[in-house]
Image 1 (tube, helix red, strand yellow):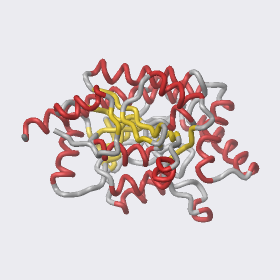
Image 2: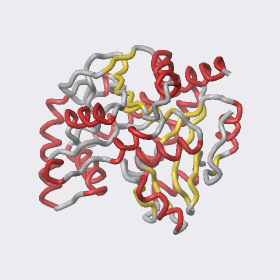
Image 3: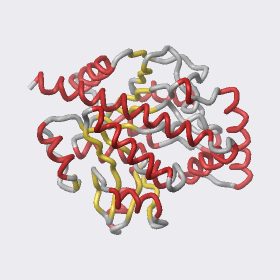
Length: 311
């Protein structure tokens, strides 16, 4: 049985699942508000929740609405996140401010991890994680996702580091922070839109059972870091890295010319890449999130089963 933090508001479905020790999968909300255009964002969010339920787990999309951290949203909540200009992009540093002001916040990977942990949810599915930005030796722009992975015991299933970032430096940083980086079914670390990044996977796993066992071992040893689980985009849906590299370089050059930085950089780049690929990157993004949802649900099922066996 998991006892959520009293500041967290849970839907009855999520609360009952946690109380009964059944599998729950957290989902972020920034991908809805700042990661995809409307209406594809709502369609994607609804379909991902459906996939998780079909696999036998309970989805818990996380956001801050009217100043309340929420785990579990209904259709009206998703529409609000997808369409309202009052929804801000909220990382960990922003949570207290948005809550105190009674505002709306779409949660990033970092803040979703933090709220998922407060709710008692151990598995979280997203598209791609943040990391060390290209040119970070000048800008010092490093995503809070990495420090949150180092301190919050949640397993994050993604299609790897977003390919607009410096993947090599991100892997180095994760190693320094002591975060296990597991790649599912391959020795190659994926690059979000592409199955291969040019970097070897730090650790390989080949089944949801093995991932769940690694999660249990990590936390039974008293280590509080989360786990980063990289799940390559399906081969039929990928955009090869050699094609994406030129697109990303052009988008980065336009970003620099426009003087955009900070938390606005990633939404700008992802939107511009959709334009430059004539929508192909959006289709790939949706496909990889669905693929991650299937794996995440299976991991959550095995993790919950293992927890029941121990108790």
